Image (tube, rainbow, N blue to C red; front, side):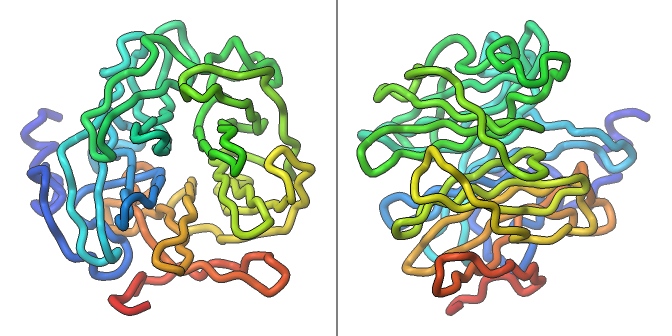
Length: 319
């Protein structure tokens, strides 16, 4: 099939959109003119910055095709601005492509983006990029991978266990990087955020698949993650970021139209939000053409989280 025919197969609204475009979210999915996956949100200076991979697989194919990451910002979760493409897998010269799940965090006025890419030496790896702005542009902060397949030995014959980084800075200033597929890992980061500070540790979680995400509310740390396949989101709680972790059960059920799920959890304007993806833009969507969604997240009095209800309505102007 030639490129022209492939392009014509896409609905007009899903073809390439100019950057720095402002739009109004009308329920879920939030972004409905292009496919977005693996959302990671950050609250900074009164805004939510939403980072996502760009699913580019044509509708007649079924495989993961992601070459770049996207960034959107909003002051109210309703009116969004898409900014220029801030980072591509090709920006890491030691990588061979594949812009998989990633997360951005701010420290000392710099923004650090931990990404999953395929290493030229084979196997998924984790790199880190840096920028002076939350919307980029970002550049490779090291010139080499931060985590490579050779550094983790739990699944030595598996080439994709070093994926899905999530990063958290604790109250004492210590930064931690969590990641993994089949096995969850974590390691301390040095204050420069580009070097490891100690040995890689393992976290044992029931039916862990991938997509760890760390957040804190009060005295509790929460480690949510994708479980099983097709994936639902489960979670564990601890009074310490290094554990021990107590499993608490399912947080978000199967999407039904996407084999994967990938979540981020944020507090914004005193409300909590669960950000995830499904395959729900239209009939061309699915596991390889995914869409970011946002719904409210609620806690019980004992600190446990209530199961998230996926909705078509999403976030309303006054949720």
